[in-house]
Image (cartoon, rainbow, N blue to C red; front, top):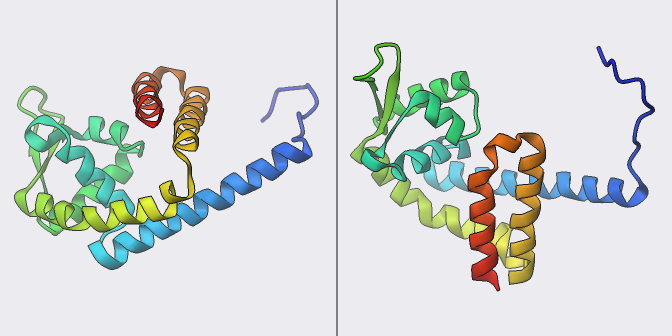
Length: 173
């Protein structure tokens, strides 16, 4: 139930056009990236993202709750995805030594190999679908805009994204 009694803040024509263009661009981008990963890597983008997150951590492992936070997915979605990745032999789940209730997802050598094989095609698709269409200045603007959107959604989670945006801005300029 909406308790807000103020009138709706309708979008202007310019905002409506920007919103629709943003939605269509996201759908096109994510569709192309997911299709490429499915076709060439045999995995959806969700699985790829989990493998990437694990590959970037010391010991190539994370607690399941940390993995969910890092991949911006629910715990149940990550748990389901990790179960599928376990079936493929790409991830192993082990009990957390410091918390009997917790579990740790570990990237296996086979998972790292699958990621290494999928990465070049994925990066090329991201480049083709996103970065080739932008100038270096627009890449910097995209990082800044994305950080602002993330901050508006969850201000407590934004520090890492701000640092990445500043790094992107520095390298683009």
